[in-house]
Amino acid sequence: MDENTLCRLLLYIYTDTVEDLQVENALDLFKAAADYQLFDLKDKCSDILSLGKKYQEEKLEEAAGDFDCGLDKKIKVNEDSKQIAECNLF
Image 1 (spheres, rainbow, N blue to C red):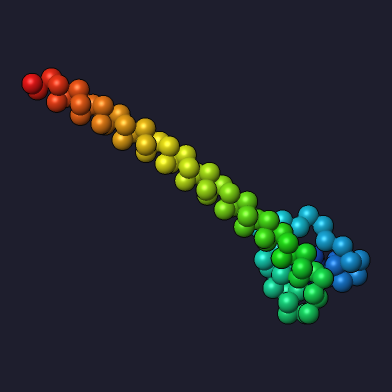
Image 2 (tube, rainbow, N blue to C red):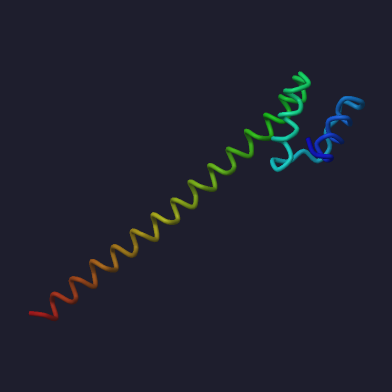
């Protein structure tokens, strides 16, 4: 385990607090909590990881929605262009 995770783990063991727990460091701390059977800490890390996953899924859905909207517009423009081109051919 890295130094940051060890410091967070010791802080939790001695003070029952977790400072600045974010998705980036929650996974390592979750693994350490599981190794040392610190179930409350494991739950706290799990909550942060779940929120992070939900946030990423929402952003992914949002990005996919933006992509779909852009794709629909391009298809519509291409269909309009095709119709204009066909009219000009005849």
